[in-house]
Every structure is written in structure tokens, then in C-alpha cells.
Length: 356
Length: 93
Image (cartoon, rainbow over all chains, first blue to last red):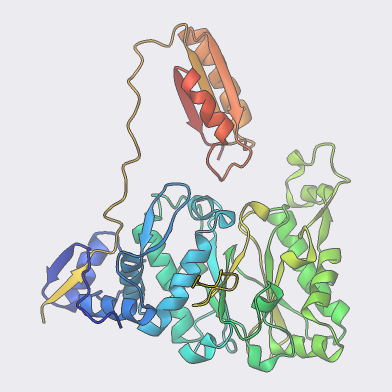
């Protein structure tokens, strides 16, 4: 607790009731088209209090346009999205990760390619906030993931002006642009969490962000062999390379429990999965001609392109309902132009200890 | 029940900068073209180059291509702009 009345700097508006608030926010282009929770002083102050942040504390600066993002503005958008104070540290961490230069936030959010920010949660915070990684995990699975993903989108719209037709030049976009947050199902897998594969210690809560296209669902419930199961994932990645973009980058694959158990029973780790996919998700440039893109094959038809520059570019996520031989690949916005970023929540892993 | 609600936008957003003074004529000038490098830019900027020289008497047309079409122009390209009289920054979509 900061212990004194919080001085918020944002302009205020007096509205007659909650319905008038909706009209004010919609009329000003401050929403995603859905109703919002009115961001009152008390609600915003509670978010900041929970995260122990001053209103004017900098979350970061958007590197291309130089826009400063304060904790207060992020908290306002989190409340609008439906966040409770306990969700706010996740929103803060996700936004911090998105502001890393390698994420290329401006390019990713402005591009005609129309990606969304995929947020993957790991560690104990998932259980604290009730984030579920099981049924309907890429849909509306629970309150926490729904509102956290939405908070990111509203913050982009309002703080960075990423509105359709404004900074957001997406030709199509996809439904994940409303909210796109997944908690890994760490309780129902023998695999190490994604955050551990990305270099963080076990038991540390973390957020991974990725500039992501729409999920592409696969199905193979007619085998238990890891190579055959993963060949289906690789085939969908090859399809994405032919039909969307050939360039290598971070792909995510979401492996629900049924297929996961076959892989785990056979002793395959996430690293084994990534190594297999790295080898199999490759196409010849000439395959573009099969998809109507013969004009750009030129004299490089025999050149082989991989979906991944290295196995560790694959984000293997254990999530999804317990039954069904399904899975999903989530392709990158545009190859390696934007890199996935993993950030610990509420701790500083490599910080210098304070000097005495 | 009356509510007091907060502005969610970045009220402190800086202006995008000011436009340079407009030129009265392009004749004899140096014009830079900054391309994002997408496929569609090739024909577009080649045609614009010819138009500037043939129809407007531009002395020099300098074309530069960004190394990453989704990111701002590379610093070495931005540094060159000071030596140009006008610049066209275009998209290839």
C-alpha cells in the first residue's frame, strides 16, 4: 500500500450512469466494440496499489514513436477490459515484454499482416488468478486469460493509437485481436514449462508474448507414434509457409493432453518435439507455384526454407482439453522480424543486488 | 448513479513533428525516395523516378530501400535526408 490518496493525472469525465459511460467510450473510439467496465479512480488506484506502482511510473517507452506508457494509463485500460487488481501485474509484465526492441511492437501492430499479441502464462500465478489451460484454451476458457488479453488490446488502441484504420493497418486481422491469452497446463504434463525452456528458473511466474497469426487447428487421432503426430503439426506449418509466409520465425504449437500423452509416454520432451519439427517443417521455394505464387519463385525453386531458424524458435505449449486428437499451430506474424519475448512477473532474474 | 471516469488515451502523446517548408519548384532539386522494399515498390518508384526527372525537371533522384519493411528507416538512410531537398516515403502494399 502506498498509504496516501493516489494522485491520478488523467482527464476525468462525469457521466450519469454506467450506460452513459459505455456511450462515452464507444463514441470516442476507446473500445474494441464490446462494453467496458467504467474506469473509476478507485478501481484504477486499486490496480496500482496491488502492483505497488505510482501512477506516473513508466512501464516503458514505445521505441519507434517514443510514446511513454505510464502505469496509470495501463491500469485504466486493464480495468476497462474487466481486470481485477490481481490480473494487473500480468498485464504490466506482458506490456513490458512487448516494448522490448526485438518484439518490434510498432511494426507488428501497424502491419497489414494483422497479427495479434499472443500471451502465454507460466508459473504459480496461473493458479492464483484462476487461469485455465484446459478446455477451450484458445477460446474463452476463463476470466483471467480473457481479461488479460483484452487489456493488452485496449491499451494498444488507447495508449498507442492502434485503432483499425489508424496505426492498425490490418487488412483482415483475426479474432485473437480481441483477446489471445493462454495459460500452460503445467499440472497435467511431465514437460517443463515454456518459461523454463526460454531460460527462466522453475517456479517463477512468467509471461511470453509473440506476434501471432490466427491458430490453425490440426487433427490426428489415428496414431500414437510421435513421428506421425508431429508430422501433422509440421504439415500445417508447411502449409502456412506455402499459403501465407515462407519466412522462418517463432511458431507456437499447442499440444493438448491426448496427443501430449502419446508423446510423453514415448519419452519425447519438448526439446525432442522441437528438434523433430525443425527438421520436418521445411519446403522448397518451388512449392509456392502450387499455391498460385509462381511469379515469385524465380530461379530459386530448389532452395529449401525452414519454418524455424533453430529448434528453440518453436514455442511448445501444453494446453487444451483432456480429450480429442487435436492440436494447433500458431504462425508468426512475419518470420523473424518480431521475436517472442519471455519476461518474469514481479521478480528481477539478473538484477544486481542492492549496494549496501 | 453518477460516475467519474478516466481518459484511457495517452494525453501526453507528442506531435509527429512539423513539415519542412514546401518547395516552389522541383526543378534542379534532389529528391530522395525511401522504399519499404516490398515487391510493389519496384515498378511504382521506377515510374515516379521517371516522372520526377521528365515532367518536373528534378536533377537527382536517390532511391534508398529499408532493410526491414516493418521497421523505421535505417539510421544511415535517415542521415542522408539532410542532403536532399525533398523526400518521398512510400509503401509497397
